Length: 374
Length: 176
Ligand code: SF4
Ligand code: SF4
Image (cartoon, rainbow over all chains, first blue to last red; front, side, top):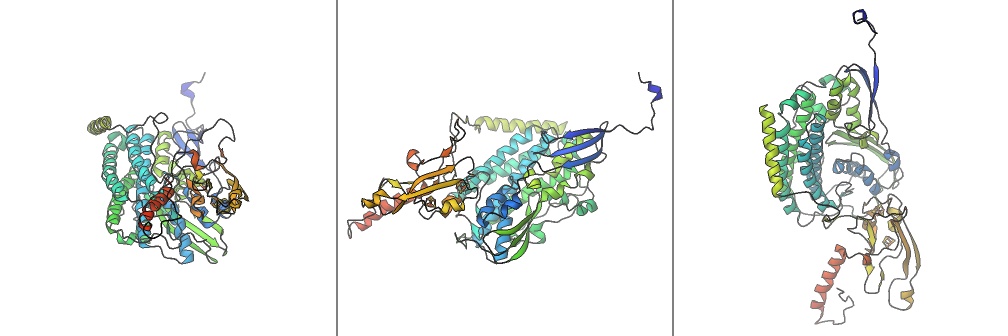
């Protein structure tokens, strides 16, 4: 029997190793987090990735340019259009071709819709992480609406393969106006509903406010981008900092936080959804008619050279470094995935937190393992 | 406390709304409608006029498929010798390994003969391991008509009316 009075209070704490994942309901994919815990406290954390590694970058070297778009669909499988966009832009920059106005507007509309779909998914699952069961039901309904429109436009709900180098695959369907005018009011209502339901819920605030605080310096040091960085008060958004496509023609704000805690990372995303809705409204007003593709079905053979292109994904800044040797297949494709860089800060964040908060902190970073592991 | 009550109210409102318009579909018994552009598994089209597939096994789609899941063999067209068809070569066997197909639609885009379309077929589960290898499953076997074919038919139906006065023997006979 242990004598209670004789416990050595200065003894080294007993650390226990706990595996969270790779199959854990709260890890958003096959992600393994090893926690050294002392009682309920996390002493040290380590993230183990690679369970979803498919060798996408290497696969790109063996595929022709128009086939690679299908691989980019599968990187961040929740925001497919944004991924297609960055690859198409990389090849376009290398070849020095212009994209027709209409195609640019279509791309922007689809990317912003995809951003909303992605953030809606985050909103629902983050609610689940914090113990709120209802929001996920409501947000999935909104996401489903968007995906039906995607299906009508591109023919697929998720793996669209719709953007092409130099434009898009085919023009919007004839009933596009109808589809979008049906979608947008419902979507705005969905976003507002989920926002009202979760944002100022006392339990939710108690679970997320002040949890997983990242200060600005750490955020910049670790290369965080997207909502994770903006929650710390850095108004950095590639759409504003280095406007690509036709983003310079829209009037929108970049929502920023102050404290950089989990709640603000959540709230920045909610605000971004409203901004995206604004962008879509403006784009629908301005969208011109005309051709949608410059290259058509021609074989894509960029000149020798390399190029780096970045754009704003729902999760942060995605970059593509493309090296071409003048053939119809790229020499090297390197992707800078936002989730991967955002995940690197996890070990710092989890130090000296409670085990129960580990789930919230991981959820607030909003990682997609398809992109982390590639 | 107040916010929880507010949350419950929102849930109640959306539940009542949901009761009025249910979004759940009893999927396997009630088929889900798909959009016109939906990309299901690819299928070859059938030329009703000469009763043969459009596909000439030119291998363009096979070379462009990102997952290398198709194969085809070519043969001399027997109908051409009989003078019924203008195609010299015709597809003999055509196989798509649907286990590997990612429904990307590239094969449809590259085909120069509009011989392959993305059908609306998406329920092809079988009991054998290789049961879902698409042999010569032509469009004819499914009752779905591809939009390209519909457009052609509409065009063909519109044309003869104008041509009738000038050239009655139009070769592009509409086929319903
Ligand atoms: S489907 Fe078209 S591209 Fe493919 S082999 Fe047949 S004719 Fe050629
Ligand atoms: S849809 Fe794509 S993966 Fe499937 S057969 Fe056609 S090219 Fe290959």
